[in-house]
Length: 148
Image 1 (tube, one colour):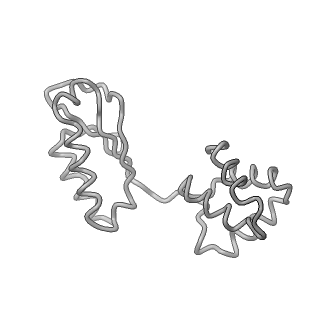
Image 2 (image 1 turned 180 degrees about the horizontal axis):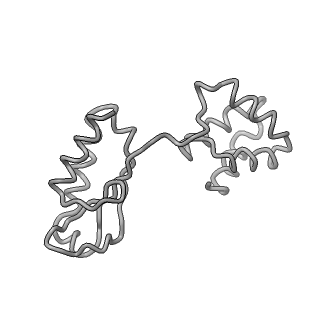
Image 3 (image 1 turned 90 degrees about the vertical axis):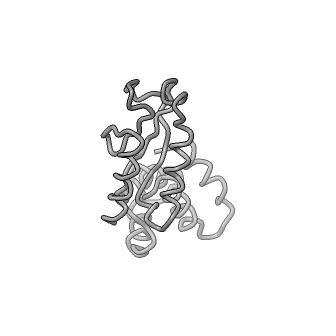
């Protein structure tokens, strides 16, 4: 949990009447869900009982998530070998594939400094901890999108 980010959210909404819901929405936007530690931290910072905060979260159960949404983690290697072999283009192509429809919300796309696979398979992409070359990465992403 990003404590500094939570502090900034609290500061942004501190002058609002009934700011708790806005704060909870912003924390969920930042974290993807409402982690237990964020709710406890919020309780301490706002000097409100955790039970009050939990009551609000549970009452608005369609708006708030207490568990992270299942997402597939995709990381494109940006190490020297992968960079030379156009990993920036692979990143762009994967982003375009994910942006084709609403299923992209089930994926988290990022970059890695180096995935330690400086082979002829470069550029490489890690999907949920498994290494792929650029072609198998695209087909794997399309397959995973079909499961959602």
